[in-house]
Image 1 (cartoon, one colour):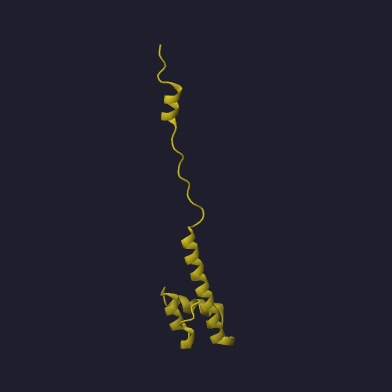
Image 2: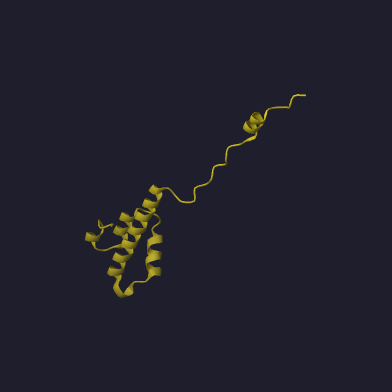
Length: 91
């Protein structure tokens, strides 16, 4: 009696490719975009802190920033900062 298939045939047909593994780390471009955005917000916070002086509070900055939705940081600088010279100094 002949076996149903040789070992090689069974091994090749029974094997399945490994399942793709999800990538734990984001891609390099998304890291750099995220980092630039963070740095822009930190710069805006520092400039806003200089402008407000003793009246600055992180809660006030946070509320003011979120009150305007999600415009580009450059537009937030125009809205939040009174000094026109500081508007273009995003980073």
